[in-house]
Image 1 (cartoon, one colour):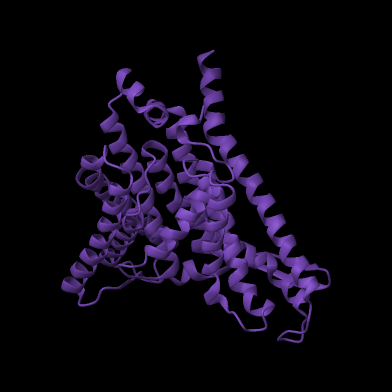
Image 2 (tube, helix red, strand yellow):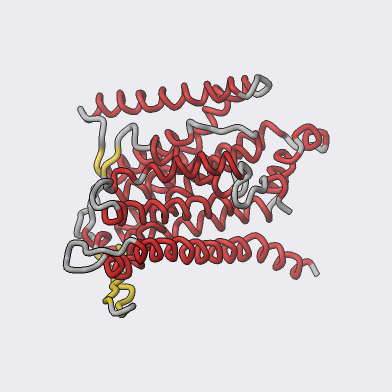
Length: 382
């Protein structure tokens, strides 16, 4: 009987969220892709390369969707940090983007210290990246705990605006602190992740003809690693929240903090562990982000952090699966905007305007559905 219950809990904690995520992602891709195709058909005209706009979209849409998914997974992983803290404290930790940034710097410093040759075997390179991810998780997790203890816990009973101002102050402090440290140590405030040709190579996924157009889909090796790592961390977080004693305590504190304290739950400890988990996820994502983009600086977390917050609101802030869904939808929309905005507007607006979509979505969601697509709090999860 106990084994059957355990299997049921594991199924609910690990399998169901992944199934939900894959279904939502598939629906989102179909809906967004269909809208793009309809718009291309309505505004069809000749474009560069001797093709029409519709032909160009048909040929490139699957590849653009893949690229958007990668961006979305990174936004989603950052959004999980916002979601965890908000689910327990109903507080937006705007310093989370800098926790993400610190994790990226910890990772790059470790990888540069390891000095792995660019021609090293794939397994050695992956081991180095995993070590960097682990270091980023530990460093960012501990930093999040310190921030909670110093900047947030003394303000827990204050009006909500006060800890929000404190979070913004912590964010600016971390940006300038990292800039000062890097400037003293390296005479530059930016760092470059090591480049490995084996991770940058394009792996063919599929090649087929669609509506008379040859469609070729490829993916970089490092992108596969990012997606797998994101899914593993999502599964791990769902397991912790829904299938462990710590998760039950987190849900209890999120649902009713005074009652949880009366039932013997150490509320301060649970809040600290929530920050630790959220910070660790942010640090790991910072390393993965650095591996993907190459160059990082002390301000690298600001825009991704705002977009991840938008993703959390879009999916339903306080909902773990919703944060993943919101991040992926936002990433796909941004990918499509970056690829097609110039083509649809005849060059009037280029890819640099893609950020407008993220902030427009944030405004629309707050106006018409402030609870998000799956607006369900961590404390309301069974």
